[in-house]
Length: 485
Ligand code: TGC
Ligand code: FAD
Image 1 (cartoon, protein in one colour):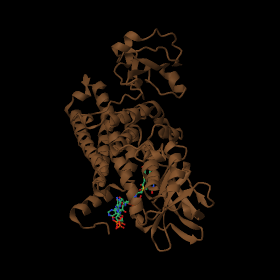
Image 2: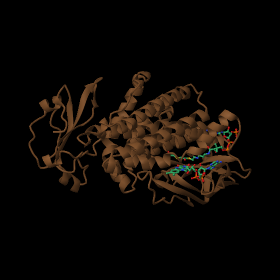
Image 3: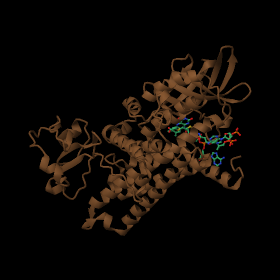
Image 4: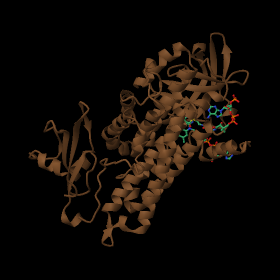
């Protein structure tokens, strides 16, 4: 046995069968309850496409919930592994999600009960629905479409939008914590939620008419519809003000022409918030619906990053868009940039989530992996990596928490948001790389999340403004001099 909780051991029902597979729930008690027991031989599990618990041997997974506040709260699933003697020196880590959140400075004390409840419920969702499937989807470069409804169900779409429109009516710290937990699972999952909440629902809420709010927001909040945000063009990425996509007045509608590229969610979206110039060259927001003639969304293939997130183009060939689909309450680049402020804030929390996952994985691995007769965690070089990781994570956690407070007060500036987005991406990419090295050869496999996070973060450090663009935003803010142009 590698690990076994004593309380679980005492209470385990006698195992009836060793055939493998998933057994029905076996025990309910006032103290705890099992939600399922999985008993499988690893080669069987593998051939069935189930998460491989160990490369050789047997594994039993027990999902347990404990009673709390009148309901049952899922706690970490226990893993009991048996490895035959000849494999005892091999770390046979399952793909099972054993994540424990680092909180080196007791920052939980800065969170309200509501914040912790929100965070814990999203964490439980990720453990249950994302971790078991995400590596497989990423390997196949496929978008797990089922998450759209699930994310709507758990309130991850538009959490700060008022409840009247289907949103969560939560504050920015709750929103940040949600993004942290989702990206702890996978950046692509966080991307799906960021785009829907900050880049599609937010502009409709902040710049839309009352009719537009009622028509689109509830469907987007529930996950019935998926949305995307079209700003970037083939020749205008960091410089969106130069966009060529345009609308021309045609009576009761406008004619939309142009193309957007690198658009998250595009291939599966029912709705697109698109930024285009009118005949005076003023940037306007337009809501385009799937099915409008001349509107297509070709998929972008061949990505080595965000492989479980769908990316595509938006192509407009004389699309007739009713004038009532134009966002009435904003004009100019500050429209899309205002949305980006919300999304960048979420990324600042999210990228830290990926960093926390890599740190947690590397720490556990280093404590178990034995070389030269002792765990590698005992070697100074590995401790240096871990010590620096937890230091940077803790600094980052403080930064995003404080930013959340400023967001709640309506006092956060775009430049402060840029600093946090940039810092979290920097911290996360460095931690992923160090963590991957700590796992040696195992670090490059899909048995661990680290390599996937590493590849994902190459998109995260690029979209919503590149690393250099955010540095220049900070530079301009502190010097008053524009180094962009
Ligand atoms: P500039 O003249 O500086 O600004 C134009 C107007 O916008 C205002 N503004 C902002 N307003 C709100 N929030 C912000 N963050 C703002 N930043 C600027 C500004 O005050 C001005 O207002 P006004 O009233 O004077 O007109 O514009 P510029 O053309 O010089 O560009 C500045 C620059 C480079 C910083 C900006 O364009 C930029 O941020 N570029 C990066 C582009 C970018 O981030 N693209 C993201 C595309 S969406 C995406 O990547 C989604 S990925 C989603 C996912 O999958 O998670
Ligand atoms: P460029 O702007 O061509 O930049 C290339 C390099 O030049 C960068 O290193 C940049 O920092 C540097 N550079 C540019 N200007 C300057 C300057 N003035 N000074 C110094 N250096 C400079 N966009 C959307 O609208 N919606 C989406 O949903 C969306 N999702 C995305 C999903 C993925 C997976 C990816 C990869 C991108 C997505 N994007 C999306 C696009 C993303 O926002 C852009 O890729 C990003 O803004 C950079 O634009 P670009 O790729 O054209 O790079």
